[in-house]
Figure 1 (cartoon, helix red, strand yellow):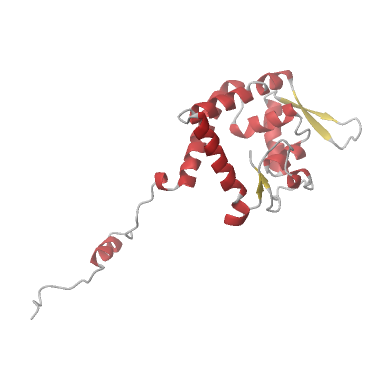
Figure 2 (tube, one colour; figure 1 turned 135 degrees about the vertical axis):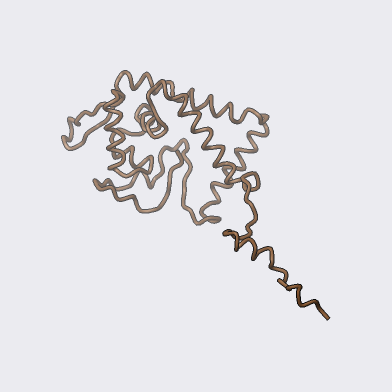
Length: 206
C-alpha cells in the first residue's frame, strides 16, 4: 500500500518545474555543433576586421564593395551598383550620396543620354580603391592561415560544393561570382526608381 503523503508527479516532473520557473527544458545549442552557424560567426569576425582596416580609407563594409565595382569597371551607374549588390535603387542612391559627400565618388551626366548619370571615382576615391584588394586578401589570408595549402584547397572545394547545391538543398537560386562577370539575373534586371526590393531570384555573392 502506497504512502498517501508521497505524491506521484510522474516522469515529467522536472519539465513541469522548468515550466513553472518560466522557461521550458531545451537542449542548449552551440555554434561549434552547427557548421553553417560557425561559418557565419567567422564571416562576421572577418568582416569586422576588414572594416577596422578600412577606417583610414573612410570606407565601411557597405561602401568599399561599390567603390571596388566602380574601380574595376563592373559598374558605371547607381543602377548598376544596386543590381550587382542586391540593393534597392533608393538605398544605393543614399549610399552614393554619402560617398559623394566624402569626396570618394562624383556624378557626371552622360553626353550620349542626358538622362543617364554616370559615377566615377575621384582621385581620392581611386587612391582608396587600389588599397582595398590588399586589405581584403590580407584579412582572408590571416583568417585561413591555420590551414595547410592542401587543406585550404579542400576546404574551398567543400564550400563551393555546398554553395552550388543550395538550389536543391535549400530551394535557393544563387550564383557565384566568377570570371564571366555579374550574374545574368543581375545584369538583365530592370531598373526601377522605387525602394521596392527586387523579385527574389539569383543572388550574387559579395
